[in-house]
Image 1 (cartoon, rainbow over the protein chains, first blue to last red):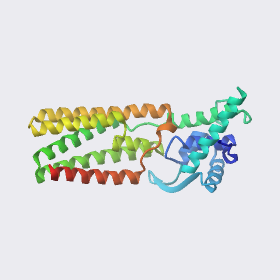
Image 2: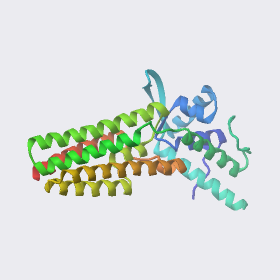
Image 3: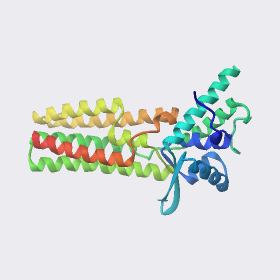
Image 4: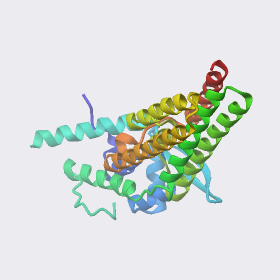
Length: 95
Length: 187
């Protein structure tokens, strides 16, 4: 049975992972704008998620400037799927 | 997070999920297809279909060259389009790349295969106007399928975001070129 994942249980981190599930890779600035957070806050979340193997990041060049691209790993997608399933089960229990 | 319009109670799983879904929809809603993608893709597919039909029917070195030029035109337009999408939006969506380059949807496959068959038959019959008509119809159908996929993606981005990776697409493109050459040589 799917369990709640403590690493993405915090709402802000769940938003990062959920937003990344819409794309294969997102530029750091694009993700920051979509989430409406500061560079430092997003960097902390990405570092924690990368350490757990949930996201991968790589350096790239976008319109002549250096950027960081971030994408969910397959482990990250699976963790999100299981966490959302566990949350939905909680909602069903309450209902 | 700061910009959420959904009232978020961290202890309420329903509001937590709603806020996360809203963040994902906000990203997807902000994405834009490059201007002129559909006519450019339709034209590129039409050129590729028409040149392939000509190459197969004529079965000459010149025909092979024309068919390969058609493939190059298609791949050039597809790659430029996808690069522009990534540059404009700051994201990469493999599902879109798969739709544009491979035509993985049922509609695009049907449009392409149907048009390819009709154009090839017409080329063997030397009915060149019909080759052109089939190629244009195939291109339009293919572009329409990409548009349909785009609407589905905007509705449910997580479900449609996945697709073949850029490396896989490159490998499949090479295989497709080799397959076309084999088809021309055998024909």
